[in-house]
Amino acid sequence: MLTLTSLTLARGDRVLVRGLSLELKPGEATVVTGANGAGKTSLLRAVAGLLRPLAGAIEFEGEGERPDRLHLIGHQDGLKAGRTAGEELRFWCGWSGAPYGVDAAIETLALKPLLPLPVRALSAGQRKRLAMGRLIAADRPLWLLDEPLAPLDAHWREMFGILAEAHLGTGGMILAAAHDPMPFPHRTLDLGNFR
Image (cartoon, rainbow, N blue to C red; front, side, top):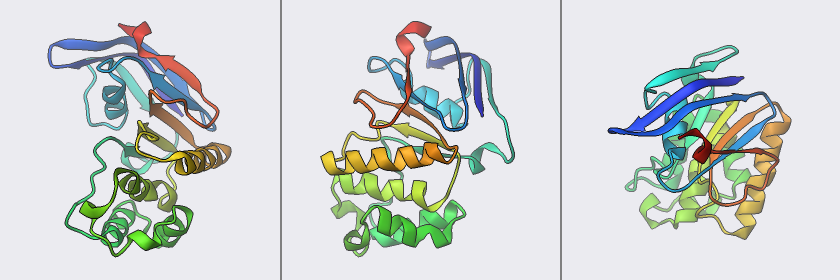
């Protein structure tokens, strides 16, 4: 379970979010909405441990430490342009502790034709699918997703909805920042209410 209590986040001298509390239980998803610059990405980064809150608490209940319990997929996909898609997928699956999950990621996300290509030659949607391979390869309970549908076509948006529902169905959790409607059951948290 993820619990945020009276969280205050800032970027530079500007307070983005003040007094935000949220509880996310196994099998639940929350989609964070708000205007550009409202703090959606900052919230995901804080939960991932990449941004220190000004005030409040972020607590995880259960076994393991934070890095072993979540995936963060953001605007910056973290892929090295000079490597092939196959090299990147194997690297990230190994880094995530799931070197044997590569085959499942390839099959689920139809990545086989992309594997010999350099990452720099992939479209934005193909790069997103490659980055999402981590979600499939290494089973972690919390997915932190920043605009996950943005570069995907209609087919892959639908497929992502199926993957997300399966994750929730096995007790996984999703915290997503989005402008687009999400194709899985969720509640909405509008950051405009926490200024």
